[in-house]
Image (tube, rainbow, N blue to C red):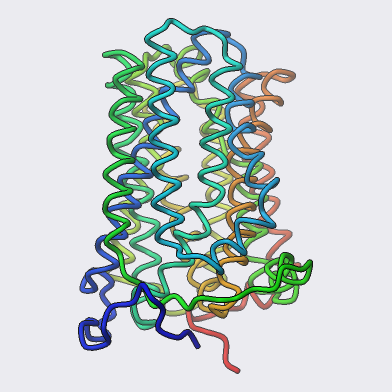
Length: 419
């Protein structure tokens, strides 16, 4: 049980325990702050991907874009979790958003000076990665401390929808802004990140201040908990391997330019397509939440995610490629909502920051390291074959994990563990 910390509002000012997350003032502030931050990152991601590929025309470099953003997450995982449990999560988020804004401004300066050395771009992306490594576990762990537990499933769905909404509009905006100039895209991203930092400062939480011992047991507590709870381990590792193999985001600039013959606007539309499917599903889930057979539904959707990836890898038609990406986004939204809700409800607050740091490392591996997997594989066997092989791999992961983690497969309702 958490105690009231220095960031908490007076008890009398707390909203009634409504299951609707947006009826709680602090969650609404947090949600919009996170939305603006994610929106900015999506703009930067599209702009950097196109800029790097425009400079080198090498899929390998597209893989490095993801790798340099992921490396800090794995290198700092033993620090980011304890920091989230020991220090104010809202201040961690605020500082990290500010650092990201400065990194975006660095990209503005580099672009205006005509830089064509991708190593400098990778260095800035590494800074982004460090900031995101600290931001991510705090942004997930803070949610249960700003709303009552009854509203947590609704908040998890809205959290995922904010990311997906940013994934719809961010890439489109990134493509359009890049058409005006890369510096315009990076400048807008910097402004959004500063707004996000300002909103985060106003969030109040009931996070307990912990005085953690500085020893190895404290540092690895998140890993120990994850590996001791099969439901949490299965949920986290399922996301890791399914998206690590099935993700195709890194190769979209190559598909847009070389396969579908599209410009930056087309890349933006492709990047937005998974978000379109996800936000539609999120809207459905907000009115018709999953009440039974959650495990079976989750594994089916992971398999569907992989199948849609295969279709995307085989397609040479714009409308079919975009339709496949929409299905991928919708299927992923269902599985993300189930996985994250189960994980948050099964994790006690005293280790939630460290567990979320592990989770964010796994998510980073599935996304950024997945981009490196896709880019490096494409450099050897071709862009489209790399996407198809990844989709088949994601389908295989769904089947194997359903067998390895029967407790996760048979989970029926999204509820906390008893005892």
